[in-house]
Image (cartoon, rainbow, N blue to C red):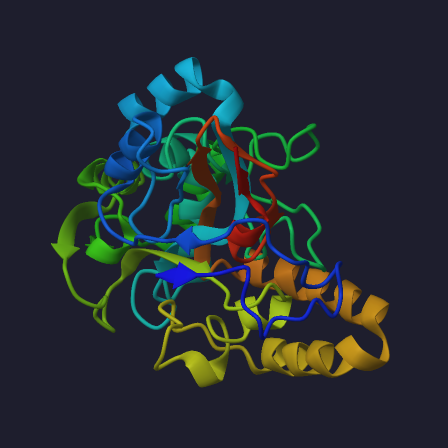
Length: 325
């Protein structure tokens, strides 16, 4: 794709909103793996390697460029929440105690390392990412709820108590790993091991298509089209979305009512809306339709001759603001 900052039709109406770009031309190529894009920058054949939809570079490549080219690496928060969707309509996760037991039992740091990658992202327990309005750190599923970090370690004893109380030990559970999550089987094997430790008979299955509606548990992630709580929660955790991207099939009319109220307040009383979004986030986390485990990072590598790197939190690097010496 080619674009010219010398477009005669362009008029800078606001330097803050849309400043005039520096490059004479921008050539953007959307192709190749993340490793290949990094290699192109290192060799001087490109000036910026972005993550896009092909995932992170491999651990070996990432470590190499962070060691040899640390001043050229850009790692930025990515407004995505990765989670395990627990089907609230079928056994065993139609029981709140079963959902909360898995929330307590999983080592979120280990799951983050197996999925997003070591040195990327951050552990979470809740729906909203940290850079959203209405976000308040919250994690009831930790061994140290009063500690310095929202999540510290799994709480296995509480997890086993909940399993015993719900009388669901011994049930068969299948973990689904869709290909679009870009995660490998190691993450699914770890979740299966945790389920087995709780007394289930677990296995995992890979699927190249959409997760089936009767899936008990599956890996998923959500990246909103626009960075507002409504754009994050409404499409994924409301009654109206049950037959859509609401993989957990979670439906609570009281939560739906609060979501509608928060959306209506965003214009008339933003502060009240933000407080309500924080409450909604906590209430959904308590009901545990998701085992949220990680918020992502976006890895980008720029060349030594590229300067004035600027980031838009929604769209990534601002290509027209980069200059090349």
